[in-house]
Length: 355
Image (tube, rainbow, N blue to C red):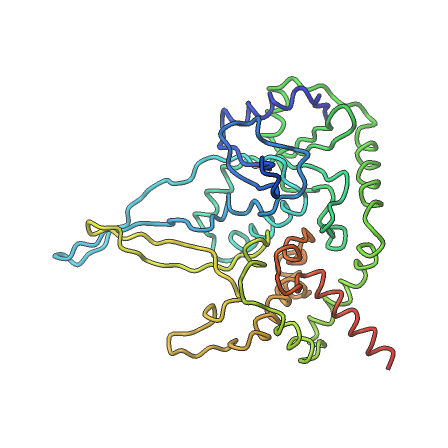
C-alpha cells in the first residue's frame, strides 16, 4: 500500500487521461444529482462526490450500442460481416464498492457462462478501474446488508481510501502497480492495512440501526423468495404499486436485460444494435405468437425480486443480485425499491408470526 498526497490526485488523473477515456463522478453546476459521465477535462471529476444518480455500467454495457454490421449483396444473396473495432480503452475513476460489485455481476453474466460476449469482453479487457472506499454512508445506501461495501475487495486495478490529508493507494493489478511507480508514490508503511481496516470499520459503524438490522432480514427474505414462501397477495400488492416504467432496471448496476435489433443503415448495410431492456415491460417476455407467460405485472415483479434476492441467483453469480446502492428506492415512483420491498415483506413475516 502507498500514500497518495491529495495534491497528486490531478497528476494521477492526467496520467490516466493520457492512456484512457476518462469516466467518473461529476457534480452538476445547477446543484442536481452527481452523474457518472465521460469527461474530457480531468479537473471536473469529484472523488468526494456522493454516489451518482446513474450507475457506471453504461461504460462497459452501453445503453445502446452497435455490436456488429454487415452488408448484403442482393445479386449474390450473400451477407458479409463488417469488422470494426469500436471499443476504446476506458478508465473508470472513483468507482464505489457497490458499483464495482455490480460490474463483477455483469462479468459473470456476460463472461462467466458457456457463451462469452466478445463485445463486452473487449470493453472489460481495455479498462482501468480506480475504486474509492466510502468513508461514510450516503442516505440511500445499504451495501453492508448485501456484503458489497463500503470498501472494494476485488476487481480493481487501484483503490483509494481517504485517510485525512492523503489517500491510501492500494494496487490491485499490474496496471495499478505501474501507475503507482509512474507517479513515484511512497510506501505507506507496515501499519497502512490496519489504518484502512479502522477507516472501513468506522464507516460500517455509521450505518443506521435499520440498515444493520436489515442485514439479517435480507437473508430471511432471500430464503423465503428462494423457497417460494412469499404469498401471492404480497406480489399482487407490489405489482399494484408498479408503474412499469423500467427506471429500477436502468439505474441498477447489475441489471443485464437487453434487446437486439437489426436496423438498415443504407447502401446495403445493416447494423445490429443492442439496447437496454427491462423485465418490468410487458413486451419483454412476449413471444412471436403473442403469448406472454408473464403478462400480469405481479408476475414480472416476482421475477425481478427473485433475480435480485434469491439464493439460486446468488449461487450462479457468487453474490446477491442486489448490491445495496439504493438507486431503485430513489427513482421508483411506486416506492417498491429493493429496501422498501424487504421492509414490506419483513412486516408480513412479523404479522404472520404474531398470528
